[in-house]
Structures are given as C-alpha cells and as structure tokens.
Image (cartoon, rainbow, N blue to C red; front, top):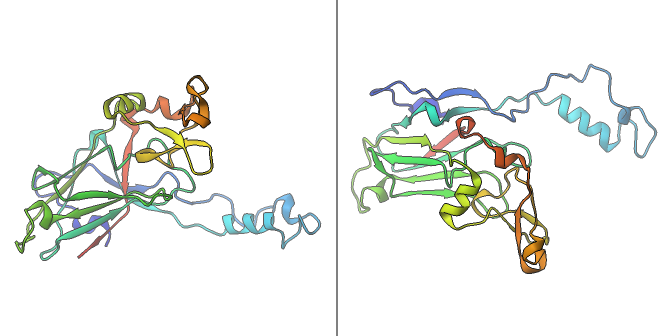
Length: 239
C-alpha cells in the first residue's frame, strides 16, 4: 500500500511530503553517451563483455526513482489511519546502496511512535543482524491490551526526534557506536549498524584485541545536524 493512501489530515495537514530519497537511483547519463574505457579495452579486463562495461551499462540503463514520505524534526506528525479490521502495520524505508547516510533517521532511536496519542506499547523496530533496512512493526491490538478487542479507529502517528549528537547518545544510553565485527575490524554496531560512520581501534585501551573501538575523529557522522535528519517511509503492509 502507498503510505499516502492512509495519511489522516483530519486534525492538521501533515508537513511530511512525498519526495525522492537521497539515493533514488536516478541517473543523468544515458547509455547513448560515450562509453567508458572499460567498454573499449581488450579482453579480459576490457571490452563490451567485461565486468566494468557491464556495470556501466547496468547503471546507465536503470532509471528507477525511489520515493517516500519524508519528514524531519520540524515537520510534526505523519498520522496514518488504517482501514477497519487492520490490527498490524509493517512500515518500511527505502534502500540506499551499501551504507545508510547519517542524515537518515535511526528508527531505533529517533522515531516517536504513538497510537491514539499515547506512546506505542506494541511497536518494534525490525532489523536483521547483517541488514541495513530498518522496519517498524506496529501491533495495535497489543497496544490496546491484547485479547480480542477491536483495532478499528486507531490513529498511528510518527514524529522524528533526532538525537542532539552521537556522542550524547552514547552517554545517555551507555552504549557504544563502534565495536569489533565478526571480520575482526572496528565497525558501527548495534542500533547504528550500517551507518556511514567511520570507526577505528582504540589503541589506548587495547585496540581490537581488547575489543576496544571508537569513532574515528573527524568522521562525518559526528558533525550530524539534527535539523537535517529525516525519516523516509516508502511503504506499508497491513493485516
């Protein structure tokens, strides 16, 4: 279902908007333009059948533009009113290549989700261990106390509440952004895994051997502007 089909503007018009995502896949180049050297070289590394030429052809021929309902700190609530009989919603965000941009809201830490004006008691953020996509499971029946009660008339609202700084988030939660991954390297872990945040060994505290990692000084993620953080909701399943 398109998110816009269920937007409820009965109390106030939402300031969230349907806009392209930061990594929407749209291209300005076309395959009719001058091909790169990879397509003109000699096999096996070059030529029309080389991997480099294939990658270029795939990129220039893929013009899909991903869109989503987008809202930030100053956009207020996105209010959804699902149809009668709906007790569960599953909201998803769009894909964005390999790592998640730091100005895309963290659904674990930066979404204020409410049902009928109350903090949601039946909401869970779903993110597979090795995956970057964050999804939101909303269980209306659980929020209302379980049992066989009606789910009708529920108003699900979502607002973005960015953390002020990532270092403040570490201090407030007593969690670390960086840790030693299964590959033995220092990487972003936990609730912020797969974000574009650079980590490095904390040599002063034993480094990788002691499982000590910290954010690399000067990394882009530390200069994150809360006013520019936005959530992107691209689709919703319901049952």
